[in-house]
Length: 444
Image (cartoon, rainbow, N blue to C red):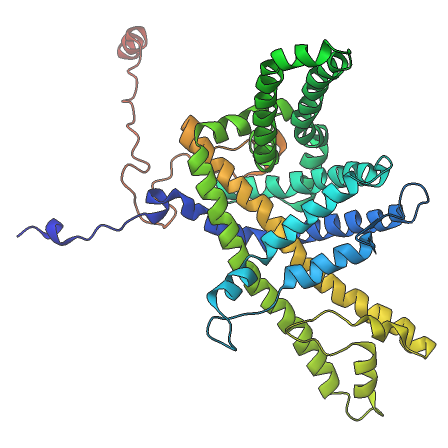
C-alpha cells in the first residue's frame, strides 16, 4: 500500500478566502508608530480647531447651541464609548448589543453631520473652510506615512522605520493633499457650468421657463454625471493614499486606479468594506475594555498604596474621579477644586487621562488606514492580477536590505552539511602545453 495515499493536504485559507487578509489590520493598527502618528494627527486637528473657534469673525460658532469643543467631546465620549450591553444580561437585547458594537460608525456619522452643519452655517463658513484645509494638510502626512508602513508590511513582511515613512509621506505630500480634492473640484466646476447657464436662461421673462422646461433633459444628464463623480470620489478616498504608498505614484494615478478598481469589482469592494467595518468595530470593543482596565487598575493601585499618607486616597478622588465602565473620563467638576494647588493638579491628571483616551481613538484612524491598504492590494490582485508581494521600494530602501553572496568553493550549506550540488562545480581538465614547448623539452 502506498504511503502517499494517507498524506493529508492542508488548506491555505488565506489563498481560498482572500478577504481573511483583512484580519491582519488589527495587528498592524496597534503598532506603536501607527498609534503615535494617528494620535498626533488627532491632537493637532482638534486643538487647531479649538484655537480657530476663538477667533472673532471666523470662529465663535455653535451647532445646536453648543461650541465646537463640547460637540467633539460629546462624540468622543457619549457616542464613541457607547452604553455597554451584552445580550440577555441586565435586560439587554441583541439590538442593544448591535448598537453598542457599531458605536464607531455612529460616531463617524455624527462627525460628518457636524462638518456639514458647519459648512451650511451663514455667513460664508470660514471656520469649516479653514479647518478642512488644515485637517487635510495634517492627515495627508499622517495617512501617507501609516499607509506606507502598512503597504510594505503587507507586501514584504518588513517594517519601515518611522522616520523613513515620514520622509516618504513628505515627498508625496502634494499628491496626497490633492488626490481627495481633484474629484470634488471637478464636481464643483461641472456644477457651475451646468447651473450658471440654466439659471441665467431661467431669468428671462416668459421665455426662460419654457426654454428650461424643454431643455431640462440636458441638466438631468449632467446631474447623473455629477452623481457618478460624487460617488466615485467619495468611495475612492480611502484607496487613494494606499495607492500612492504602494505604487509611489502621483494623485492622478491614485484617482484613476482607485475608481477603476471599485468600478470593476463593486460588490467585492463593498464586501471587503463591510467586513473591515464589522471587524474594526469588534476589535474596538477590546481596545475600549483595555483602556478602561488601564485607567481603573492605575487608579486602584495608587489609591491602595496611599492609605498611610494622611488622607491621600481622598485627595486622589478629588483630583481624579474613579473611572467607571460607563464613563471612564474625568469629571469636569474635579477641575474646579476650591484649592488652587488641587485645581491645577486636577488639570494634569485630566490631561494624562485624555491622552489614554486619545490613543484609543487613534486606533480607529490607524485601523482605517491599514484595512484600506489591504483592500487596495486585494482589489489590485483581482483586477490587474498583480501579486500582493509587489510594492514600490525606493533605492535607499533596497540598498539597506541584506543581500547574501555565495562563497566560492564552498561545499557545505548553512547547516554545515553537504547539500546537493553545493560546491560540485565541474572542473575543466588541465590544459595541455603547446606542441612547440613539448618538443623543446624532448631535445633537452
